[in-house]
Image (cartoon, rainbow, N blue to C red; front, side, top):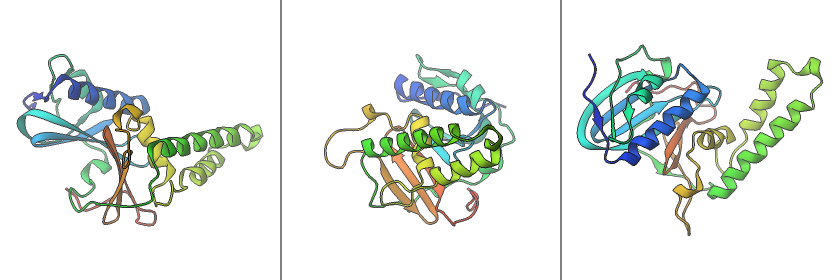
Length: 225
């Protein structure tokens, strides 16, 4: 049994959600997403492979809805009618382990130390460039998956600014379109925000958020929600 169609506040909300889903599918054609709707808001959770983070995209709804289901990202994308500002929710799928455990809904507090948007984007660019150059310099016999993973872990675990946020989280945000300059207002205090709740960190931007456990907090898990 499929849920009633979701009606978005405007066509732009539908288009932004479609863009988010398309980026997730680019990294994982079989991607699943968990949908949670309450009142006039929809939250869409996904996990792009290799980044080891959860990506969260919120959308405003024109009509109140109550929904909590895990579905195919590809089928949901196919069901979005951007011009009409609505989406048909596909049937539920057996979700991956991460879909059963999500970051806390409340208790988030802002943390200091995160640099501005340009500096965050620059940190990602430097990390990408270093990874590419170091792997290209490897002798063919040493270019093994284990060695590539080792280099990747070293580079992507580095903190952004004076924070605990690893560069891989910022890289995920950029890859998913969350760090587009047009989304940010200019002036003091503009740019992405770093939040914390318990063992979780959250990089929040106008286009979406990236959530992950703090280093040393264990696997990507929390009390089921």
